[in-house]
Image (cartoon, rainbow, N blue to C red; front, side, top):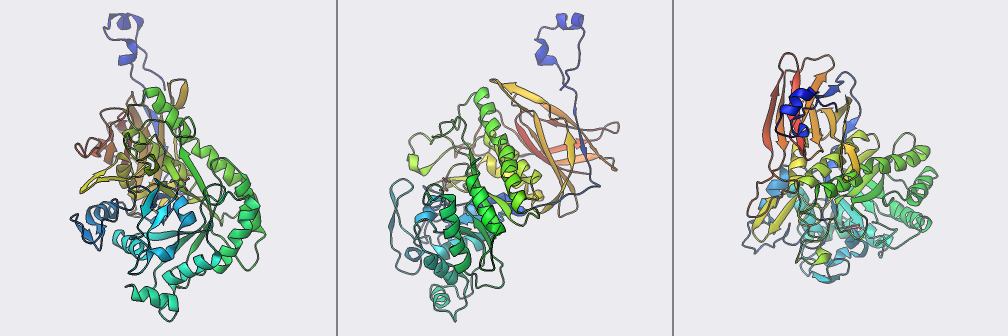
Length: 519
Ligand code: AHR
């Protein structure tokens, strides 16, 4: 960025410091609508709901007898909010929880409580099981992404679970499902073949996992012809490549008996590394920059795994599925540390937008992603407290990005400039563009810099853009949050810009996310 020069004499007469009055030249941004790219799969806006803390119980499930308004035990306020996000899929029941899940304890009239050995040392009542999850999926209008237990289960248990969900009532398990209230087969759109097999899912070597995974990929059948089922294998953690190599090599050498459609990548923004110790609020401008530097590192991670995948799968048949991502921060004071409760600030909104932009730029390979997690856990969309519910800044970003679901990417070029804090230099702005399913041209713009607004001088090749209309999400403070007492501190505001003298200048507030359509 180039500051507008002031004469020394003029500068000397100013009472305020030069930096405070220097005006940056606009960032020239050009959209090439004539050269559309690939589809931005709606599944990159997927979510993750695990039996962890209050993610399911209280967040989704309150029970049929609750005074909180609900439909068959599932809270209505949460369903209404999620419907507005057009959530493409929900990954369930975990996570590490899935690695020990016994699906039979969670069906029928006689539920069998179990210890939740991974999260918080509490009893899992199993009141929310397969039929309740499918009801929830149907209520919010999403696809089911079910992770089977490869860690401690057997291929037969997993096969019977998917048989229970997808077979007709001629089958004994299909009949059992009908007796439990659902005669029609469910649709299982995505099947996770294990979770973090390199860690909580069994600490398996890549080779051992590959042998196990092939058995699940072969024996777990989808019996519902109305719904093709994508299979996702466990893949890498962050930048570790052995799982990427082993799974993709096995896939290249596959035989008639098994196949895969996705490889999972898990990578969280954990500034300073594990255990998570970055603050959810009360962080400094330097800490803000350090966090977002980690987030931006997602791009390198994806490139690294893509390069390996390309050697085994140049036609990009296997999707890279980033099915756990988001900020993992220090637990909220006073909360059970095993419940992974954290507040969600405007910083996390920017973090979400940057991640979504990275996924969109890799849309040819990254065709699915699931933020961790949906409600009350980690970087959540929604926080609840008894009957109260609040939408987080991250929720608002997902809502603003709805037009990018299944949109066609359009090349956009700009000079991002830089901003520096605490020895960390980051791009100052980020942007993606796409042609929405409604035919409109959309721009998503992020001003990462928490101190300076930025002017964007937007041009569209072959079109004189006359106006930009949409919403902007910004906040009074670097760490502003929405609380139950003040639920709209961070809320999208209408945004319009009109061309002036042939120029369309969009002024982005500091630390903001803006989505507009161009006319
Ligand atoms: O999202 C929380 C946990 O993080 C998941 O259960 C696990 O897969 C990952 O380590």
